[in-house]
Image 1 (cartoon, helix red, strand yellow):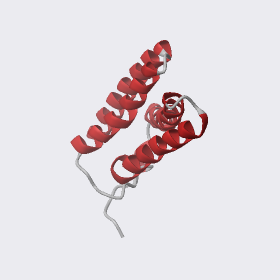
Image 2 (tube, helix red, strand yellow):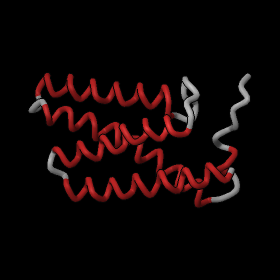
Image 3 (cartoon, rainbow, N blue to C red):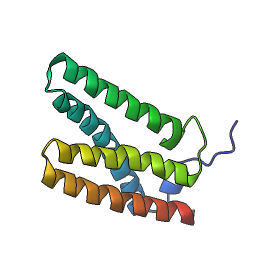
Image 4 (cartoon, one colour):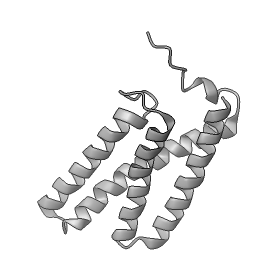
Length: 126
């Protein structure tokens, strides 16, 4: 048994919080896809691109699962969790810039920053 709060418990009261949590999940999944795609592009495609894309994807998922996921393996403090989120989410935004998707990268970065700010605001209240 753990004494961790149920992540779903805070969703039951406010539909806007639930919508923002859903957006966070979508942004996280996009980050993983972006990193895999960027790795493929950085290696100019082919087998090396698949390997680099898979390595970036595996690294990001591992980092996220260990420290930032709702049921993370290690209980890190809020600052450490935010640092991991910054590395993965803003790293994927930087990857978008690097492969030439500037407009998408700007929109994605704004969504990441606003979504994370709202999430952290509601988490501190509960």
